Image 1 (cartoon, rainbow, N blue to C red):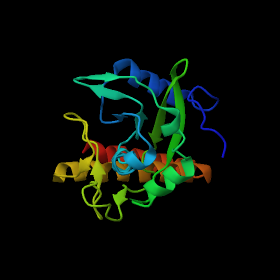
Image 2 (image 1 turned 30 degrees about the vertical axis):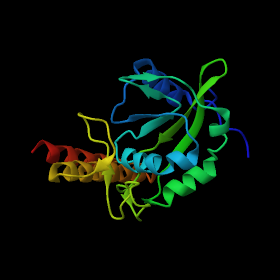
Image 3 (image 1 turned 180 degrees about the horizontal axis):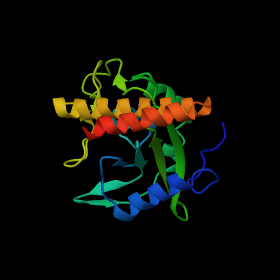
Image 4 (image 1 turned 180 degrees about the vertical axis):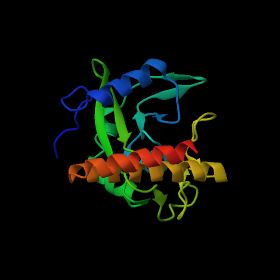
Length: 210
């Protein structure tokens, strides 16, 4: 299997910039999560829960492995080579998507902090069509429950948790509607239905202003 790409390799510029921003602040956010260096099997279920939740964010999110918390501070300790070797992209993706409906799309990449010190980055893409739901139970105590929609709430404590309020559900459904509308408009334009697509977009905007 080919080695994992680095974030500064061709085609990963936006990911590189996103990671640089995260490590410059060293603060968890709704779309940023840190985890200390551990083998995949040790982090498998917590990362899966985070991936399901971040896929329901409008811009997705990133999980950085190799960032350790000491008291109230985050330290860029890096990822050990023995731990890094356990993160095989096909296995990671398959095991995460064993719990996801629809499937989550993600990228694994290495990010160099300094000579001989790297962290592992998982970039989770936002859902394309409908929100991601956990489709089966995980082992007891691992925080994965069938039929649950996990989110990363905006503001407050950064965490991956189930939807708790009608307002949170409404916001997620609104975003799903926006994603579908955007996809429909793009398809009609590709088919040469430009004027009809523009009329629909204008009508949708007018409805939103009411």
